[in-house]
Length: 69
Image 1 (cartoon, rainbow, N blue to C red):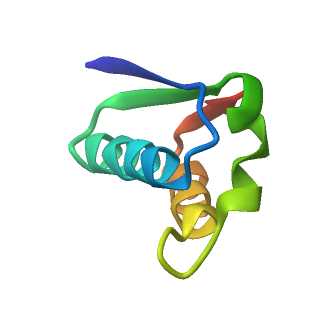
Image 2 (cartoon, rainbow, N blue to C red; image 1 turned 90 degrees about the horizontal axis):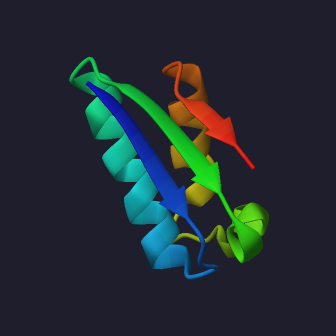
Protein backbone atom coordinates (compact mmCIF):
# COMPACT_ATOMS: atom_id res chain seq x y z
CA UNK A 1 0.00 0.00 0.00
CA UNK A 2 1.18 3.54 -0.67
CA UNK A 3 0.80 5.98 2.21
CA UNK A 4 1.27 9.75 2.21
CA UNK A 5 1.52 11.56 5.54
CA UNK A 6 1.24 15.34 5.45
CA UNK A 7 2.56 17.23 8.47
CA UNK A 8 1.76 20.93 8.65
CA UNK A 9 2.16 21.71 12.34
CA UNK A 10 5.14 22.60 14.50
CA UNK A 11 3.74 20.57 17.43
CA UNK A 12 6.55 18.10 18.33
CA UNK A 13 4.16 15.45 19.67
CA UNK A 14 2.16 15.39 16.44
CA UNK A 15 5.33 15.29 14.33
CA UNK A 16 6.84 12.51 16.43
CA UNK A 17 3.70 10.40 16.18
CA UNK A 18 3.53 10.93 12.41
CA UNK A 19 7.11 9.69 12.00
CA UNK A 20 6.41 6.74 14.30
CA UNK A 21 3.36 5.82 12.22
CA UNK A 22 5.44 6.12 9.04
CA UNK A 23 8.12 3.84 10.48
CA UNK A 24 5.53 1.28 11.54
CA UNK A 25 4.02 1.26 8.05
CA UNK A 26 7.48 0.82 6.51
CA UNK A 27 8.09 -2.17 8.80
CA UNK A 28 4.86 -3.69 7.47
CA UNK A 29 6.14 -3.35 3.89
CA UNK A 30 4.19 -0.28 2.83
CA UNK A 31 5.62 2.54 0.70
CA UNK A 32 5.54 5.70 2.80
CA UNK A 33 6.12 9.35 1.97
CA UNK A 34 6.06 12.19 4.48
CA UNK A 35 5.48 15.70 3.19
CA UNK A 36 6.46 18.55 5.51
CA UNK A 37 4.43 21.71 4.94
CA UNK A 38 4.77 25.19 6.45
CA UNK A 39 6.10 25.22 10.01
CA UNK A 40 6.67 21.45 9.96
CA UNK A 41 9.73 21.96 7.74
CA UNK A 42 11.67 22.99 10.86
CA UNK A 43 10.77 19.76 12.69
CA UNK A 44 14.32 19.34 13.99
CA UNK A 45 13.78 22.31 16.34
CA UNK A 46 11.24 20.23 18.27
CA UNK A 47 13.68 17.38 18.95
CA UNK A 48 13.86 16.56 22.67
CA UNK A 49 14.21 13.66 25.06
CA UNK A 50 10.43 13.40 25.26
CA UNK A 51 9.96 13.57 21.47
CA UNK A 52 13.14 12.30 19.73
CA UNK A 53 12.19 13.56 16.27
CA UNK A 54 15.66 13.29 14.78
CA UNK A 55 15.93 9.63 15.79
CA UNK A 56 12.57 8.83 14.17
CA UNK A 57 13.42 10.84 11.03
CA UNK A 58 16.77 9.06 10.69
CA UNK A 59 15.10 5.66 11.04
CA UNK A 60 12.51 6.72 8.46
CA UNK A 61 15.21 7.65 5.96
CA UNK A 62 17.28 4.52 6.58
CA UNK A 63 14.14 2.42 6.07
CA UNK A 64 13.71 3.89 2.57
CA UNK A 65 10.92 6.26 3.48
CA UNK A 66 10.53 9.31 1.25
CA UNK A 67 10.76 12.68 3.03
CA UNK A 68 9.81 15.81 1.09
CA UNK A 69 9.37 19.46 1.99
